[in-house]
Amino acid sequence: MDRVIHGVNKFSKFALYNLPLSLQILSINFFITFVGFVFLILFNYFLIKNDDEIEKKRINANQNLKSIQTFLEKNSIIRVPLFNDNCTVENFDTCKSEDNFELSDPVLEPKITQEFISNKYLNSDFNIKVYNEDWIRLVDTLDLYDLSTVEETDLQQEDSQRNDLNFFKNLNQKYLNLFSNYYDYLIERDLADLITKEKSEITYVSDSIKEKIVKSYYIRDKDNNVYQQITAPIQNNNKVYGVIILNYPITNQTKDLGYVSFNILSFLILFVLIMIFMSLIFSQSLVSPIKKLSRLTILERERVNADKIIYPNRKDEIGVLSKEIQNMSIGLKSQIKQLEKFSADVSHELKNPLTSLQSAIELIDKDKIAKEDKKILIKNILNDLRRMNQLITDISMFTRLKAEIELEKNQFINLNTFLKEIPYIFTNNKKEIKLVFDTNNENLEVLGNKNKLVQVFINLIENSISLSPFRSKILIELRQFEKNSVSIKIYDQGKGIDPNDSEKIFERFYCDRQENLKSHTGLGLSIAREIITHMNGKLVLDKSDKSDYSGACFLIILPVRNTS
Image (cartoon, rainbow, N blue to C red; front, side, top):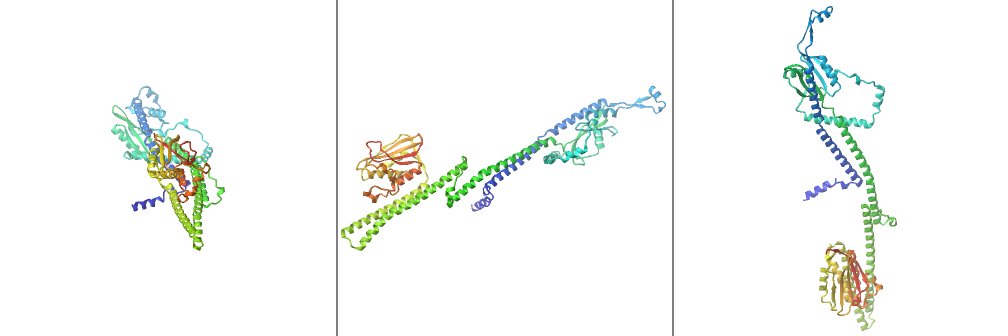
């Protein structure tokens, strides 16, 4: 286990979150760019593998070869006249008129062959050669040229244009060369078992004459280029009169595919540039406010120029974060102020009985008072000690409660079920006060800590009991307050509370019952309101709306989840 944890810590140093946010965004961009170029390589691979141009060209080559073979076999194998050896220049006309010449055996006639090839295939993609049966080459399209394609070129202008090539054209040419090399590599890899070294053309002619069949070769020439060569015999009556050689290059023929791939590359580069540019703008709009928030939190912590702190006001997630930090700052300041006030209140509440104790002890120590007065002083000392003991207990409970409210887990509490458990707590109250419940049949649930909510009802009901006469009643009424909230009212039949003190009674250590001051420290209602506020609710002193319960009326409002 330690080894695994050590490994995780070891590699966590290289985690992306260890980098500044702007570098994280750039790293993501570079990763996307890398993936894009990998995609481009795969795209080129599938583009080449699915290219059917080679197959189309092979079919076209065979069709053209068949057409040439058919034409020459039908039209070029003829007999040519053979003149008599006795004929001279002086008597040529006489020899001719007297039919002194005879026809030869059938041969492949050169003129017809040359005219046909020249007219049909001079500017084609195929290089065509024709040999007769004596291995003499009659036609070679590489030795022919078409005068109509000859144009006058201004060399100075051409040099000027060549010098005007810009970066894009250079990049285009370099990429096409790279793509061509990649194309040739894949094609040669697929044809590796079929490619042979180049031999002399006479060898191919000889083999074709002997075997009398159409043969196909994949040949690598001296320049390391691969081309396909097809040989076909020209024959009649099972006799071969010549051989046709048709060849065309396979490699270095990727111009159209290269342009398609280059266009994809151009789009990818443009996309990457736009993405990086937009990321830089986005990172600034993201990083700058986060840095500002970081500086503001430092200013808040160090309490420097607190009046000049202005939080970013935005509607996005950063705005939400800014608002939450601001609320947290306000909450912390409020907690600090409450702590200061609480400390002052505790100090004040403890100082009074301590002063009284000091005075009483000083009087007893002087031994100049009557015996009866001494008893009264001792009684007061005991009352102050009880008061201080109760005060310290309540203060301890209050501080512990504040911590528990923040740490303890909440749960959904069914109010109908919850209120049914309350009477058992007050079964044996000394005033024999009866609790009456008026609940709602709906299934109402609130989110909170059950133990703390019980503490609220204990504090409120004990407060009502202390203000109510012997054998009176306390009414607890549960109602749906609004669509998403519920109200709980606690009525008693006591003397009530002055409306002017509706907020004072919730202050810490406030108590208007001087006759029983030693048992009431004034923290009960403050604790109850603290718990209800933490549950996103309200606790207030309300005016009683029931004639039978004209005493105090406490109103609790809580957000509710209606599950009916």
